[in-house]
Amino acid sequence: MGILLRTRAAGETEQMDRADCDARLLDNTYRQFWVINRVLSGWRRLYNKELRTIITPDRRPVTVLDIGSGGGDLAVMLARWAARDGKQMHVTGIDPDPRAAAFANQRVHTPGVEFRQAHSSDLVRERARFDVVISNHVLHHLDSGELRQLLADSEILAGKALHNDLVRSPAAFALFSAAALPFRQSYIREDGLTSIRRSYRPAELAASAPPGWSVERSSAFHQVLTFRRG
Image 1: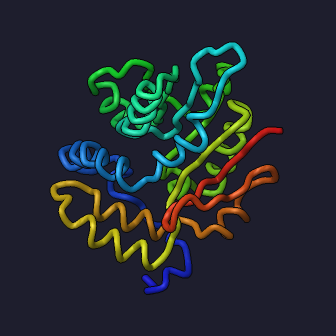
Image 2: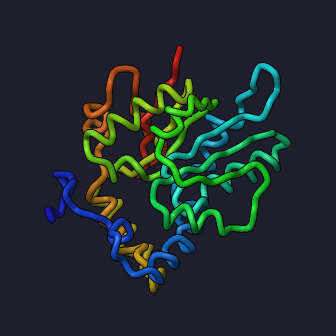
């Protein structure tokens, strides 16, 4: 690994994505992600800027599709924030991995949240529609074909899409390497460092996206691949 991380480690695989990974460590990883997603992902700012202000024409609940929802942390956080703000929001979390879907569905139920084992293309076939499509730390997991499919599905499913992901940098790698030391008996630190190595730099992500998509920096270590129709 080059110390400056000039090249994406696109061929590496996170341990939790392996079919034969340790089930106990995977379960612990889903549980510990709550801290990572709440503190480091930057979604509170994105919620305030991009979701909190949405008002539907008939004042129905704002509908959000969380693609690659994993253990369900983000879906639950968004619904709780919306409830505290007196807003109606319904979040559907989907993940094709049966292990992630099972973990999410075992959570204590949060009003306005549902989880499914599904791919975004399944919802396209169902002709589902949402106000917003989102994802968190998903883009770097995808190969070029999968990325194109995700973005095409997003355009069909909603008029607005926010795909939040890491920015590859030596600073992010070094800081996460130290910050993740307390997370034990899980894949948090190992997979987090792999994720940073696999992530895009903004120019790379912009070059990988079709027309109509833009890359917006949301923090020093995060970027959002964004689509807004009209």
